[in-house]
Image (cartoon, rainbow, N blue to C red):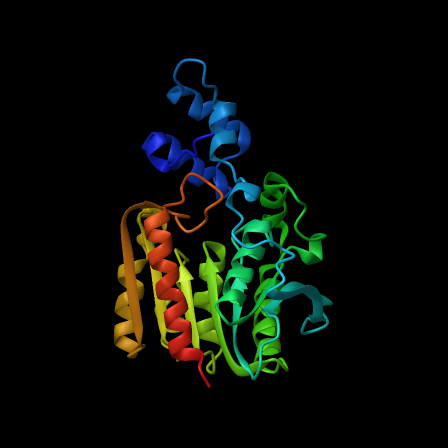
Length: 296
């Protein structure tokens, strides 16, 4: 079966799907609005199914890949918050201390795609740790719709504290070299920006289409940033000019790329919003940036 791309859908449907993915539109609302753009025998339900993630089709690194050590671990959450559970992956048989990367998921928790991203990083020579912000609510439920429904119920103060704890864990991880970077996507991109404002010793941050902090918060950033934006992403891009001005004012080292003509979520290869060329370039830049800034 031919894999569909964003070009196979109308801009109106893609905008509706973006609203649906980010909780601005419910399933019923999407189906009702999308029905106006259906053609022939294609129903709104069929459109939603075609736009929804296909994890198996997109998987790049198998969970049991012999080149990797992968396991789920729990670490202490601060302030009596219980535990943080996440997916820890490192290269098998690695010698010496390795750079470490915190991987922050989108607004669906630790799903198979983000686990795959962590494995890709490990194959590139990093220790990768991907926590699940949904763990206090039972963890990623195995269903994207259910995960989206859970996300608004999260205590975001706790979630942010847990990601700080995860970064601190990586800093002292026995297989790590003490230098920590963070990469995040969508919600995770916002967390990557946030961690840069919170952690003065963060060595690098790569937010993919993430929400931006305030000017006051941006002034606290010490880490170098690699910011990745989609060209067709009005909602997130609206905050970029003000953020860039704040970064310049604060003297923060940053590099920003806007990939023209691609959708929010272009790096996520489980949905038709994926753009192979932009994703490949963005990932090459990400790995190179981490290698440059996380080497001991």
